[in-house]
Length: 139
Image (tube, rainbow, N blue to C red):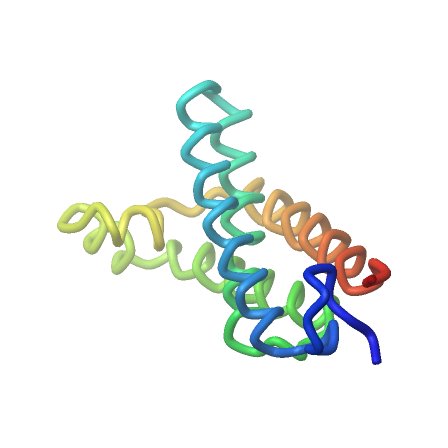
């Protein structure tokens, strides 16, 4: 049996362990996004935030479905990110963003084509990290 690094009898693929790791990854990603906004401006903050938005969605996908493969988690996160971006072509996100800070953070307000690329960067980075963590040997 593969043991976790803490030496427990739970297998490395234990859904509870994966969910805890995904929740921690989501918190770290939110912290990284807030930190990026605090220290950077312009394109670095905006497009870095876009990539981290998709990384956060990937972590939430893994939290909800701990046995999901890295590629599938990245694809779902990317599809959701792109769906939100394309939704901004209509008036609903802008209207909701005017009324709510949470809606502004989650939905944005204005379509920006370069965001689509940076969401893909975030999905690829998240997929690589997820893959590396799944393959990491356990003691």
